[in-house]
Amino acid sequence: GAGVSQSPSNKVTEKGKDVELRCDPISGHTALYWYRQSLGQGLEFLIYFQGNSAPDKSGLPSDRFSAERTGGSVSTLTIQRTQQEDSAVYLCASSLTQYPYNEQFFGPGTRLTVL
Amino acid sequence: AQTVTQSQPEMSVQEAETVTLSCTYDTSESDYYLFWYKQPPSRQMILVIRQEAYKQQNATENRFSVNFQKAAKSFSLKISDSQLGDAAMYFCAYRSRDSGAGSYQLTFGKGTKLSVIP
Image 1 (cartoon, one colour):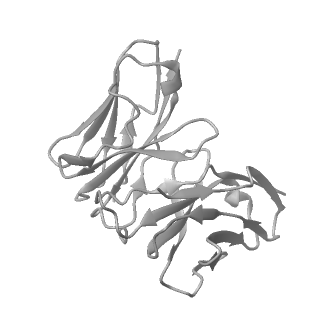
Image 2 (cartoon, rainbow over the protein chains, first blue to last red):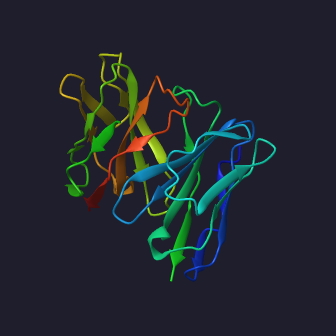
């Protein structure tokens, strides 16, 4: 079956602009995670969705970052007034449930470059 | 909070040889999962192997095996008979089995870049 997909694959934007990153999880997966991978760093957790609710937003680095999920499926991560330090690869993962015995499947990521 | 440390930013191995990637972690929890993920240039994170902390037996998946030392909080990955396709970034990750927030997110190390020499 289809895996997790993300769009766009690459995004170049100017400092101060808003961007939207999209994640299409595997069908039927209730849990969805966003991670950020900065150059030379591991992945850092941003936000977790269970269905359409986000019970854990603890990783969002500032109030410029927000995310939503609709229909228990597609999720959008929005970054307002982008800064150069926002440049990173943004990865989305989904799993059947949130419980740790269910594997998280990752998408290919969106590489964001802020000029 | 849990932390994961990978002390080898880069490693190289001759094709068909064996290489071991190191990982240590810090946690106050007694029950958790540990993972090794592979990230090729395509950026797609691929699960290589996982270990449940309550299991004493080390996990094995074909040419990949781990050495899990719970008391030492060490979780190394051994790749046997290395192949050119094994060249990638490898990330060690931790996942709690008892998350207060209920998110059970993964906590990653910074990765080890593995090169395979023909």
